[in-house]
Image (cartoon, rainbow, N blue to C red):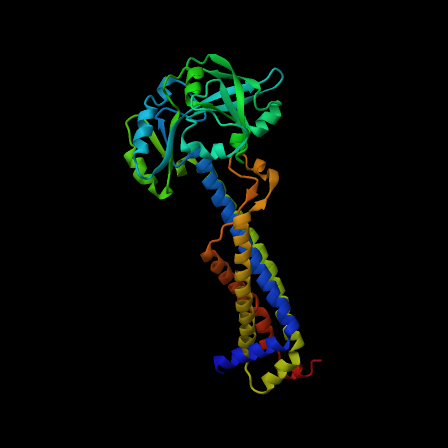
Length: 408
């Protein structure tokens, strides 16, 4: 029997049983839409998390003294860069570099007369474009001035925890290179909310000059952070910044934990995809089995007229394929519309960012529309539909003509 006849017979049956066809079609379209939305949400969430972490915290490249260990925030002179301004100027001259600035880190204790908490102190250049994301997170007051004498910038949540606000004076104690405590009083000039818990809950900002002064670090810095126009240029810039006594780290080395989390998350979300596919598969299988039961007599007549079992099986597979193709087309269209909408408007999740620990999550999550993913998901949906239709088709092909003709 020509393939064209199979298509025609499958189409006629689908049209004849409009209610069953529409229900199945809707199930496929909505199932694929859900899978596409989940994929867009997960892709957007993971990509956004990495991009925000790079933008807010790590940069694409960092330069550090060979002996520096970031977990210790060492202020020993031999652990700091003694020429950070020179290194920053070299990096700024490269066309691939978008922004660059030295940073001095130190561990400290921030407190009032009744409350105190451990924080990481970051000495920054308030005029550098590298810290525009911090500036964009300003919720009250103003950003640090260029000199920043006596000024401190803290997170909104940290301020709420300590019961302070803009204009209040607050104590900050840090260690100097000799390990002795140095203490000063600072005026809170601004409160920030970046959506990055590691910054908002446990980081305070001073001007680089002020941080160098209170820690007794001279003109030294813990790192020179570099932000690129394109992450693909990391190798080129790293090669250009090779310097004796200086370790050059790229964004992958700086974000090993984030990348590992993304890999783990991707595997977990694959399970969610499988569950959605399974639900759709069960619906399709049940629908096709019901079709077989409803058409038992018809199948018997076709068999009595000489249609072979494999031809009956092929007819049902064609029906499933038609349903899958039409449902997938509408699923792709609807899924693309939904993902595109939330890629612009985002999905508000409020305090979800707190669950991200040291990784960047804002108040809203944005989906990512990747066209190739639409068709990949549709392809796998079609594969699942064909696979689950094998049993109903095989069952129909096994029916004996005499038994089928006597069926009610």
